[in-house]
Image 1 (cartoon, one colour):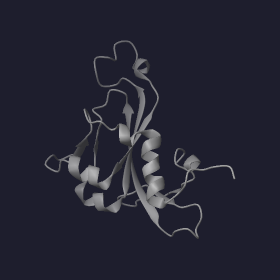
Image 2 (image 1 turned 180 degrees about the vertical axis):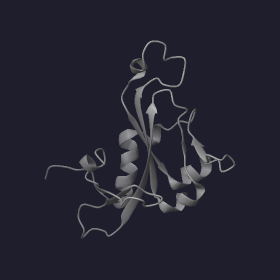
Image 3 (image 1 turned 45 degrees about the horizontal axis):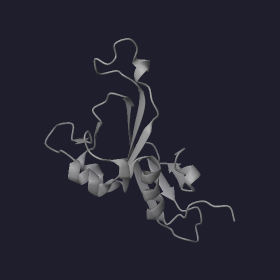
Image 4 (image 1 turned 90 degrees about the vertical axis):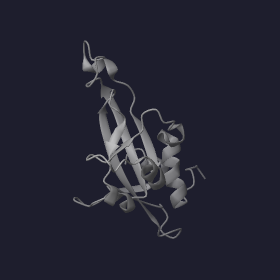
Length: 146
């Protein structure tokens, strides 16, 4: 929410227990459009995570975008954790993925139903570029001082 709001995308937390999405985004001017965008959020704490996340196949239709928050708080899984987990700490990154991307990379064969992103070029979906996808879907122009 804290990254979408400065982009002038009104963002609200979905009611608890809502299956398939965590955030609801709308245009800041209700006269412009009544459209809403539903976002599911997944997070990974470890810097050395496998960059994969679980998505149940039945929930893919319930969101418009999925944002993966790689929080990168430190090394927890690999041998790189020699001295301290904190050594691996770095800036978080946010990847905004479309339903189509999720469908293409979703593996329903495993019991975890994972989407694996390791080795994929996600630069077009990273941080501000990804948030821009949500803004475009809502028709929200970039904020400017009039």
